[in-house]
Length: 204
Length: 204
Image 1 (cartoon, each protein chain N blue to C red):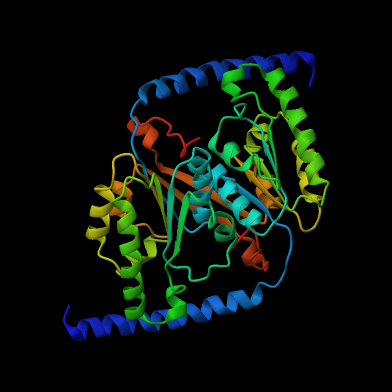
Image 2 (image 1 turned 120 degrees about the horizontal axis):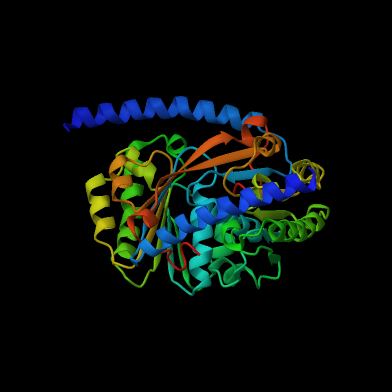
């Protein structure tokens, strides 16, 4: 590029950024409310649970107390539990029997789901937990292991300032309607389909 | 539901899970390679940086050494830095001047980008870092602050077993092609648009 072209590019960029700043400043001015958020991270792509764990890191950075319920996973040898499990501000529960296609037993899955939900309910009734992560809860709704109305009711009636993150594929519409923030992660490309094994420290 | 209907529902579920298990077992058998992954988390939805931070937690759970470059952010009072910044296995660099619409100065942004990229390059040449997080790198490519070919070359030639996560909106196609895993987070709903302020411990 010639110096004239560079100068023109810089000028166009500057004009664009002036407009952008005005739009963003106006939306910041409109956002004034403080409240506990219900965040849903769904879709088939990679990054749902890790997004919840990264948000936990932020919350713990401010000294908040965090409760985690992992509803599907049965293994406790994951990187996330090794890292967070012993933190005094974290209460971590692995509440599953493995994926539904591993147990091959619907009645057992329902009993496990109900035991897990009892743990979650205790946290969702206690304002002492400032963030509650309900990892892979969506599957329990999708397969009708839990009554959706009961789950939504408990979420809607939790303490005002308590944040909750729900992860998992196929979040039902009624959950998304109740949520404040919904992100849908699309699976554009996955190393696994190219023959790469689940990598320790990345995938588990 | 009558007992007969419940039994039928359980039988249908069991048949479905038998088929699902066969498909999943076969794909696990095909995935045999171990290698450092390049993961891109892009799109307009919430959860990109937190997904990278959650993956860091997994890696740290296995005692890996992690390097973080935050390319846009200038503030160091975030929850993530408070939480991870003092971890002996983490090297954390805040390398930005704030968003492009805050600086309002393209030449300054380019100089800042180049200084930041020098830090990243050092990590991307060093197999001692098992995971490198390049938070919000995409903006530097999108605005032509860095030469894309140079960036892609450095990523392609990094140590074999080093994992890298790139976050930010608008990841360029060439980056997605190089990546092993690409997740695109869609912004289905955001509390901010309903007037809720960025929440400490959740959004920052």
